[in-house]
Amino acid sequence: MAEQATTEFWKDIKPIENVFKPDAGMDVYVSNAAYADDKYFMQLSETGVYSRPLWINPSANKWCDILMAKNAGLVNRHYHPHEVFAYTISGKWGYLEHDWTATAGDFIYESPGEGHTLVAYEHEEPMRVMFIVTGPIIWLDEDGNSDGHLDVFDYIKIAREHYANTDLGAEYVDTLMR
Figure (cartoon, rainbow, N blue to C red):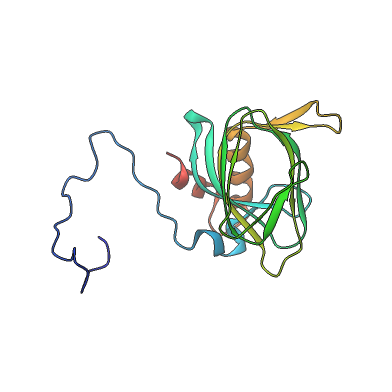
C-alpha cells in the first residue's frame, strides 16, 4: 500500500481492491534503481560501460536497464532493428554519429535501423541512462557490416553469470522477468 496521505486532497480515496486482472503479471518495483550498489551493475563492454537490468521480457526480446559509466566509456558500433527509448538521469553521453550530447533530463528516441557508437564523456557525475530496448542489438564492424548480436537471451546469460558472483545469486534475474 502507498504511503498514507495526510493533507493531500485525495487522502480519503479508497484504493482499488482487485488490482490485477486474471492472469495479469506482477509489477516490478525497483527502489533507487540508478544509484544502487555496484553489485547490481553487470559489465556490458570492456570499455567501462555497465548495465543494471530493471525488467526483462524474454517473449518480446525486450529489456529495460540503467546504463552506467563512471568515467569515459564506449559501447561499440551497433544498430537496433527496433525502436529504443532513452532517458538521461545523470552524466553526459552521445553518439559519435550525431550532433547532440545528452545530459540529465534529456530524452532520446532511436529509430529502427540507425547505426551509432555510444560514448560516455568524462563528467562530474557518472553517466546514468535508462534505456528500453527491444532487441537484438546488432554489432557492427568498422565498415558498418554486421559482426554479431546481443539479444535478450544473451543479456539474460550475462546477467545470470554476473549475479552468480554476487550475494544476490543467479536466480536474482528471475525476479526481473515478466
